[in-house]
Amino acid sequence: MKRRWFLASTVAIAVVTAGVTTACGGGQSGEQAAGDADSGSQVLTMATSADYPPYEFVETAGGTEEIVGFDVDIARHIAEELGYELEITNIDFNGLIPALQAGRADFVMAGMTPTEERKQNVDFSEIYYDAKQTIVFPSGGGISSAADLEGKTVGVQLGSIQEGLGQDLAEATPGMELAPLNRINEIVQELKSGRIDAAIIEDTVAAGFLANNSDLEAVEIPEEGPAGSAIAFPKDSELVDDFNQVLADMESSGLMEELIVKWFGDGAE
Ligand code: ARG
Image 1: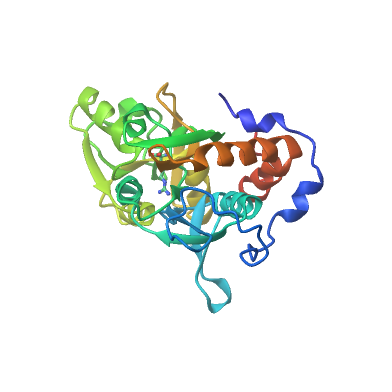
Image 2: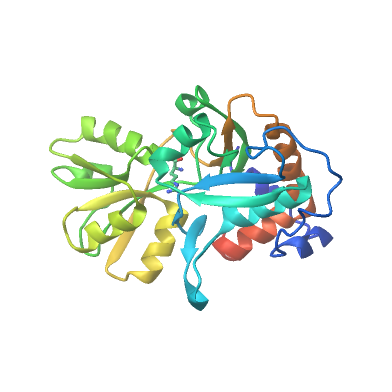
C-alpha cells in the first residue's frame, strides 16, 4: 500500500477543479444521497482536528479564519463531484470517532489512519496518503533512535496511533513517560518550553513544524504498525463507495498528485 496514490503521474484536465469553491448546492439534480446528516439539504458535514498542517489547519491570513489543507481540498473536490455542499467542524482528534458514532458528522478527514481497532467502530475509505513516524526533540537533544527515549517524557496526541506507539515504546524503554495532549500545537509548545523532552509526530507534519522552528529537530523511527490516511465514516455509511470512486478518479486524473505537490511540496515521493 506504500504511497499508492503516487502511481498516477499524468496531470489531466481535472486539475482545474482544484481550489474552486463548492458552490454547487443549487444546481444539482435533486438526488439526495444517503448519509446526509441534515435531511432536506445537501450538506455533508466533515469533522476534523485542524491542528495538523499540511493536512488541515486554521489559516488566519487576511483577517478571516478558514480551515484549509490537503484533506480539505480533497473533501471539497469529493463533495463537489457528488453534488453536496461541505461544512467543516473543528474538534479535538480524540473526539472525532465519537462524533461519527453520534451522527454529528458524515465523515472525518484528519490524516486518520485506518487501524483495526478503529474499524470496529467506523468504516474507512481506501488509503489516500501514506506516512512514517518521527521523534521530534529540541535541537541538540541527542536522540538518534527510540532507545534514546530512556528516562524521557514524550508527548503524543491523545487518541492517535502515535499514542499507541508511544505506549508500546514506553513498555520497552526504562523510565520513559508518556504525555498525551489534545492538540499538536500544544505538543510543539511543550517541547519548546522544555516541559517535555520529545514527541512522536508523523513525518510530513513534523517537517512543517521543523521548518518554522529551527530549535527543533527530528529523527525517523522504523515501525511496521498501521500508517497512512483514510476517510472515516459512520458504520455502514452509503457514502463509502461513492467517496472511493472519486478518490480513484482523482488518482487516475492526476489531481491527487497535484494536491500532494501543492501541500507536501515537489520533494514528496
Ligand atoms: N495518523 C495518526 C492517527 O490516525 C494521527 C492523525 C492526527 N490527526 C490530526 N488531525 N491531528 O492516529
